[in-house]
Image (cartoon, rainbow, N blue to C red):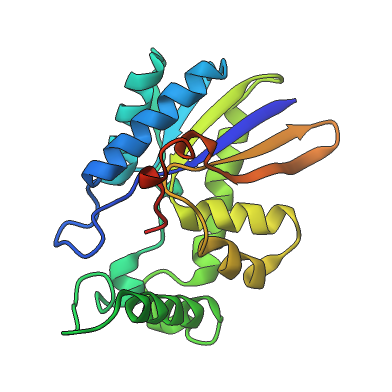
Length: 219
């Protein structure tokens, strides 16, 4: 049985001009994750990350905190969907004067629902079906690199993690929409691959943040 631990990156810089870099909180979350994984005895045979800056910074902080010495494989197919192309910058980078945070998040969810509906695929540089295929290809490549009983830690984003989790429980797009809203920064989702196929074991584990609730974030 092989194990994949899918890690969502630490908190990025929501609302800033450079969203892709980790916030100070994101760095702290990533270090806490690495310490927790090492304390649990996790010693990966393979470390993979997406090509985004927030993936690299999360990986660097977690690997350093865990004391791992493994080489890191970069695979851009683990990247998040194209926020700029999908959202046209309207939610992440434009601020409406006096707009409550909850309303901004509501607009964010509405744009994601439009993109994932399948009714407007030609409007986007990367359609939702193309995103699904890309993430699945990254997942399959990572599995192919593992020998039986080996473990991979993959540093990616909430969209890919949620899509794989939804797929593995036959939930499809409705499940993806719900799961993607609640993925905690630096959380861990566990997948097993073995004699009974590929199965989701746990989703969105963030127990490494629970001792200090100030570390918890979703955006």
